[in-house]
Length: 229
Image (cartoon, rainbow, N blue to C red):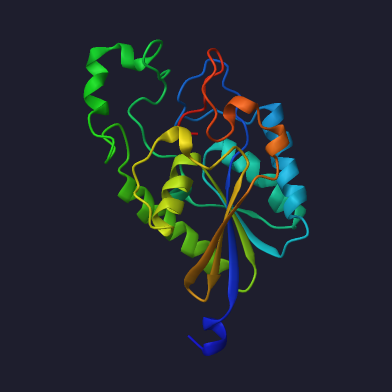
C-alpha cells in the first residue's frame, strides 16, 4: 500500500434499520416477513435526506427485509445499486418468534431458564465474539468498496453495538437497555488507510423515534421493545 493510500480517509456509516411492523411484540430475530412500519419508512427517508449531501459510493444491507427497506432510499438518493451482505444479519437467538419477558413471555417457562444462565457468552444466542468477526469483516469490506469516499451499511442493533464495543475496547457483554443504538441511528467509523481512527454516533431521525424506544428508556407495558432488532 502506498503512503498516499495509508493516509486516505474512508467513512463507513453503520445504520440500524427503522421501526418494524410488529403488533404482537415478538422477538422476530432472523424470521422473514417483518417489514418496516409506516413510521419506519419515514425514518429511512429522513436518513436518506440526511446523507444525500455526503460522498456515498456504496450502500449494503443485511438480507432481512427491514434492513433492505431501510437502505433502499439511501441507495436511490445516490443512484447506486443496493448490495447485500449476509454477515450483517441479526444475531441468532433461541427466543426468536416468542415474546420475551419475565412476567409475560418466554421466561415464564422453566424449560427456557437454561438459556439465560450465561450473559457473558451469551447462552441464549450467537456468541458476541462470532458477531464481532462477521461484522468486522463486513465493515472492512465496505471500506474497501468505498476507499476515499463513504459507505452506508444497514444492520441490526445487537451486532452494531457489539461491533462498536469491540472497536472502542469495551467488554462485549452488557445491559441491553443501555445500548446507544436507537432506531435509524448512524454509528460512523472513520478509517485512515486500513485503521479505524474515530467512531461517531448520530440520530438523524430521533424526533420520529417513540420515547419508549430511545436508548436508556424504561419499557412501557404494552409497548414492548423490539428486542434484538
